[in-house]
Image (cartoon, rainbow, N blue to C red; front, side, top):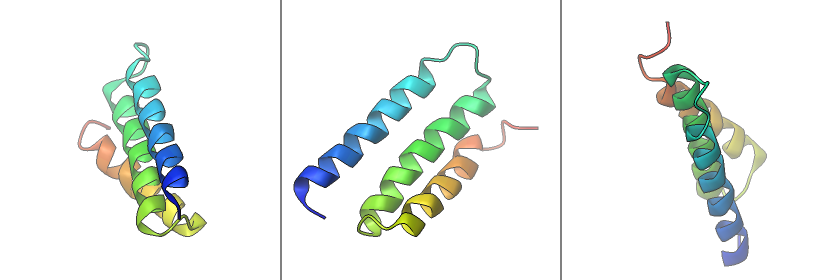
Length: 72
């Protein structure tokens, strides 16, 4: 994965995080899950060299961790 692709992935993750935190009608659970999934997807993509499985796996793990204990 070249530098341009990594930069694009990073920007996409930051935009996802910014949009998710700007949604005032979302609960803390929903915000945490959305931000976690966005950041996890970016991290999974970078760590796996851009593979689909790595991106999806990272998003799932990030979403679960982002939800924390706030969801009932």
